[in-house]
View 1 (cartoon, rainbow, N blue to C red):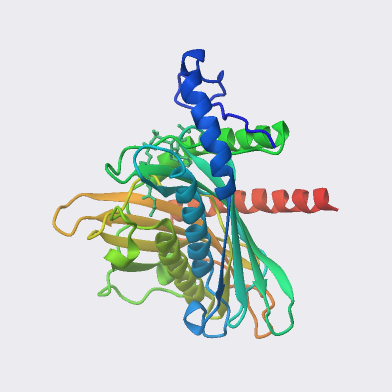
View 2: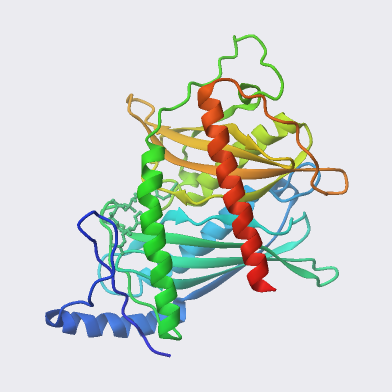
Length: 375
Ligand code: COA
């Protein structure tokens, strides 16, 4: 195995561009980094396994998507933090900054064992990509199925100063192609992030007023739901900000409530579009997680989830995260079934519906292309 040093930099417009490797004057530091990278190579994998219990699942026994996302994030955080501390300098913690679009491939049930395997697959100067696989094992029959695959990006933040981003030791790649593919994924997500940053700055929707007259069923406002959560120590990292997995679990919960209110059936998470974590949420903050339906196909529901954070005492409120979740309605035999159409009210809802439709068609075409490539 060879150790390839990642190359990255910023173009004038702030978007990442590939640049030449570090200067020759840094060669002494470079060779130390490479040695450390090789040593850190042993830390590139991590696996956690856990039996699924009733409080991980809904009333019919399907494990919540949010629980799976939380386990995925825990495994990613462990492998990322371990890797970034395999060098001298400040001790640090890998903070989740992005999760790529994630598909839930097979449902998991109470009693099954989730084997979550995390592997560092790319490192840039200040970030690392972790790919995670979740295998569900039926320990009575030995049957195993791939329940989920995800790609997460972490940034090491110093324990001394939470806003100080540390360097990431390079990893070992098995080939130049593998490194090249990683760099392409890195460049692609950097470009995409510029677009989503604008969306997270959108105005916060007003919370539904309980005094209002009852809403008409199957409208956006009928199922819109919010959850308010006070961030406690058990939600936080050693540096007192919320674990990404905790936030994703809350988001999945709200999205699930919206979906269930709309179709009044058992529902499961089918996928989550890419999520970017631009800002930290600190211990003691109040988070308001709001979900609203944006689009409905014949058998799926797209729910936009917005996470706003505010301090208990100060008036500042900011959008910490937003994402689109897709849920499916299931019948008694766990088969997808039709969902009631969404009654649209006004131009804004229509705009969001049309955008959701475009995402739906794009995702469907991509899934089809992936399937054809695999055949
Ligand atoms: N996805 C992937 N990588 C990201 C990213 C994102 N959303 N945001 C930042 N990065 C990477 C950058 O590419 C850069 O790495 P590079 O130099 O190798 O390209 C590195 O992070 C630092 O970027 P920089 O612009 O210097 O810092 P920043 O202003 O983006 O701040 C954090 C980085 C981590 C301090 C900040 O994004 C943050 O606090 N995010 C929230 C983290 C968190 O709380 N996670 C839990 C969520 S509940």
